Length: 230
Image 1 (cartoon, helix red, strand yellow):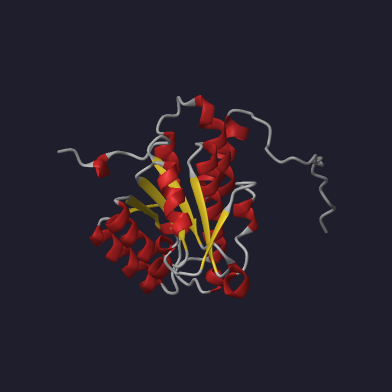
Image 2 (tube, helix red, strand yellow):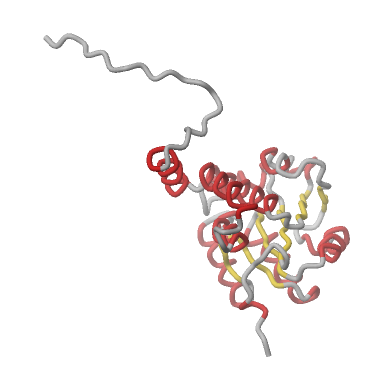
């Protein structure tokens, strides 16, 4: 018998859900720096867009409590419907179940807030009742403490959830640098969102390969003018 969890993520077998990436939820996150969290969420979203991954956006109690989804995330998916809920568990909303089913992919990549509540309950129920495989993006999710995040991840892993990180997912989708149709877009995401790796890519492009610097504005470099030394 084959084990489907041994299959790598591909653009053909994956879908993705972003759960409650909203400001009030982010205010409570203590397991990861919140600016890093937003960076990772947006990077993951951009990767999903590059590879045409079917995407679900879901929110909870937007007007009464949680606030509106990060605009940087929404701008990656212009015109995308947002599935509003009252339940902390996205699986409890029929719209979410229908959207996942319509996408027709059993491997579900998850990025959400909070790890120990909305991610945990969705993952367990989607596996138990929907037969989905869950790939939890640990660094594009956050909990109310490091312990809350870590123990929720452990609980989900024990139940069969597969832990991943956002860049791991993107590069698993890319798989081969010979896939030139997505190469440039993936490298652009890396340069913008991948920290030291992205800085290194920029350096290699400009200093080794003599590519132009990627800023969009024009700048002059003024030659050194030594000042008098007393």
